[in-house]
Image 1: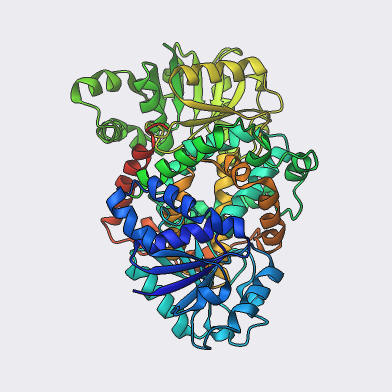
Image 2: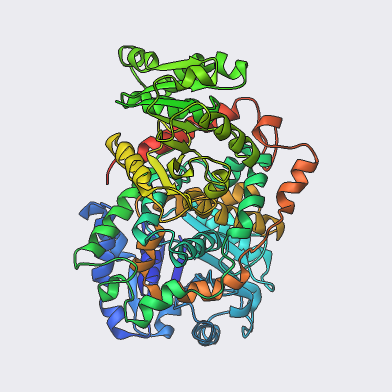
Length: 302
Length: 302
């Protein structure tokens, strides 16, 4: 049993807290925003309902999570600290600076970053050798994957400890040889999203069609056979032929008019009622439920 | 009921024949290679076993598919012809030239191309207005998606007829506004594969890790929620922030050392016993079965 401190009680922070507490660990959650902390219990309860956790099981899990009013309260007796604050370099660096002033030099620090360079995140640290990138997927109490990566200064012992602890929790844990922005999963995801936006910008199809294609083809396959196994399966020669033929047509964009256009008009997606699609009030809840059902359906083996 | 001719009895041709015959259509299959034609019945029987089709149902399906020894035999009485020959421009153009000499100008011609430009495929045709891109996914008797696209010369009436026929068969049919190499699905797929190879080339991880990530994260989600709905769900502002931050790091490659290296050493994947992964004899069959099980598991709604 490990005592964790989590900085950031938002979407990822509270979800990771649930995942850790379900595995028997104790978690103290701190957030600088009192409203976020105040709603923590309610959001944890909802997460446990989504896990179909029976009330008898939910009680002990909830009891292992406490809301800490200050950073000083949070660090009392912790074996490891995880930061899950927004993906902004200055925010993460300030949080780590404040944290390091309060914990011993040997306490592991996990960062739930994936888009930022972990090495950059750790640049101002007094003891960057204990910083490990530990990237969870949302919702963490359902999604099995955790990506673990070292920064340039990280001591491999801390990486190994993180992997051992996560694997011991039953997590599907992968270890990157080194830190790259986006780690593995988000690079794969956003390479595909970039191309999807490219198709919209070229007026090949509308956003609904992109999703229909994904759900009725690739989405049906990638839960059971990954892209590297598939490349071997169809043949690396065929794979190369297709890539050589298609690659010059694929997006290499670094700007995204298909997102600028709705955003300039105030359409931010679910939160604003429309985006690439329209979002009547009940759609957000329906999508969350459909997503979690889809994930659970695929967690069976093989 | 429509009478189809299919040119090309290989992997895709025989699979499409099964899909059409299951929907009650009659199919005559021609292949220039006598060995391919000779093994057609056996491969159709195996496909029907994989569909868990009871023998009483398999008989009528098999009876609706005939092997045509010549192109002239194949075209007798056909309402539409589909070509499923290899993705080489010269091969497809030759096949269409020979075909057009034998059928009326009004007979629809469907091409199962996706990687080549459909407009290029149709360049030498006498009546390119009847050429429709109709791209099936493998295996066609399991995968629901068919992508339909017009070439530059295609009459929209032929596109609409193809969509109506496929929708009537219960297919998930999407219609592209225009023909682009890779259509939608293969562009999305190979944008992601390109980035996966990039990660290997940068020594971030090994091929098995790529597949582990895919199967335990994105692959669990994309069968139920596509990338556009997800972008709205998490917010287009966040989506743009991540893309702007990641895109400069993503692959824009048009050459693929991670494939050249194994291919130069004769490692072509499953067929040669090794590729990105190793392929003991039983692995091919195991992957095919795992893939089909995975697809079926996700064909439930929602």
